[in-house]
Length: 444
Image 1 (cartoon, rainbow, N blue to C red):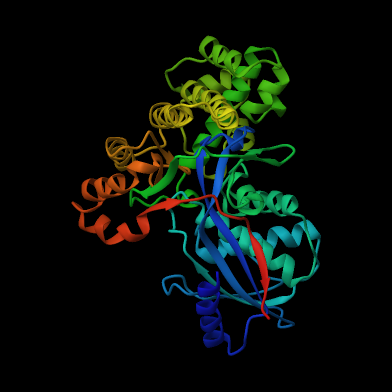
Image 2: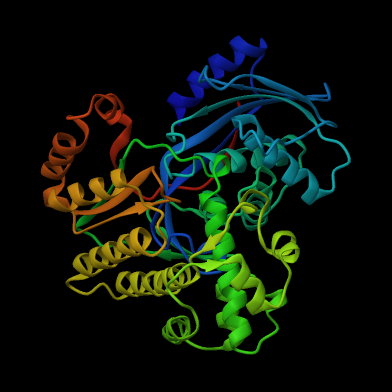
């Protein structure tokens, strides 16, 4: 990090006329498999990437938090420590930072906060599905902990930062914040929830992971696609629970339903086939089945930005979640037993994951599908969207000996023919290795 901290130190001094007291960094991540299932209670399999969010910080008794960014399009912002407000109608960069500040403040029950000057720099492309926003929240949480001198464990930081991103309206499941804090260099992680834990997953030798950005941006907080999927999974949980004679009112996650029924993922898939129909459900049908009013549906089940929704694809969403949860466990089992054809088996699981994201969860887009096809034709054994989808990045597993021809083919077929993509190609196509987690550096 020395190059980045030196550049940031100069920018900080230029802005605030003093030197920073410490630096905090939080990495982005690539999810290898397990998309849209963390908020359903299921394990996921990400690794941290070397691209990160870095903040330089000084502490004062000024009672204000001053935020600046090395990227001029992200404007300066100053707020009183007693007047922190997050506008979820307007998801600007500084509100993500303030999510982390407020989350740590509430977790520690701090009546007041230290004043801070912060300068933020980042190498994670924004709205790309590599967790730039969650890394910013995690970095801010770490900054707030350090500035107020209240040490917290990595697990506590991860859990707190996962909860506080909801201040901006994103009802995520905690994968992004967990890997940002719990990552270790050289290994991917199986991340499980309730309780939060991370297990090393050794990736096979002989293959590398390549990230490619389709160059369509997707901001989760600025659109309702993401929360719509959270809500569809929540309703599917309740409808399945009702069909099995359970008290559905307290059940929110497809994973909790499986725990309650004490059956396998295969049996959950059978239950989905038996109970749910592939045609979309109307509000009316949901309310009738659950015996609730439209008002109760809106107040107790829908999120703020899905109040307008009229059709719910419960069958497709539940089938994806239970199938994807099984693929994550299969992926880890292959990594653990490392058979001779491990690379082929893992590639196949990645391909099936993308097909499920595209066809059942409908979180892909034409550009992502085109890029996945290009990557497979270029020699990847597996390729899939990563992150929330609807834009952002693919991750491909490429045998080491095919890497150079793979990169050249993807460049020629996806980036070069399009002027906008071509201009973005340098930061859009890169090999990645499992990186380390969030950290604090004290300025000597």
